[in-house]
Amino acid sequence: MSNIAWTYLMYAVVFLLLVLLVPPLVKRVYYSKLMKDLDEDNLILYEKHLDSFIAKVTFSAFERESMRLSLYEAKKDMKKGDELIQFMTHMRLNRKQRAQLGERGFYFYLAQGKIKKAEHMIDLVKEFGTPAQVEPLVMQHSILLKKEAKYIDQVKERYEKLKDQNGNIPENNLVSAGTFEYLIGLQYSYKNDKANMKEWLEKAEIHLKGTPFESEISDLLKGR
Image (cartoon, helix red, strand yellow):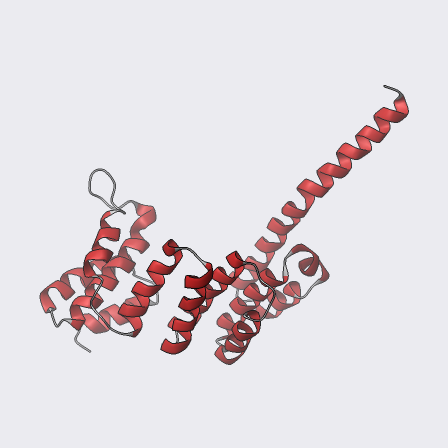
């Protein structure tokens, strides 16, 4: 092969490497920058980075608007968050993105106790997602919004799956375990089963210490 041919081949290889490797690298680095802004509560810088040229060419429109929703949640601007979710439902999205939007929107409305809007988000996931995506949403909707006690056995089954072969809960599963303990205890509170409620919520209080659930668990245990 001639020197010219080798040169063109090298150019082609370098070009392919740039096309294949650089965009994902830039995406990872810039995403880390955005998350750092959010973790440090530097919301002005977060918005500036989100609206930058680099972000527009690196992330899809769906990804950028999803991250903008995080901004509104951090600002506790639920009105703008609601408007953004409604806007996103009319974007040109694929099935996977619509299911992701349904999941994200569900948790947004769940935090506000908005039953009807949360149900609409579940409908999106039912239409475009998988049964595995739908099941936890339906369960949480029943327990946290409708205040039903229909899923005690199912949540206990999920809880048992977190344990290792010795029957212990690994360190990395403690928060998940605490969440299940909370959901079980909450259902027992609906049934006015004080003994079981206390048993599960006392476990949850330990595993969810320092989380937004802590004060609510404490209130339930004190009978408030």
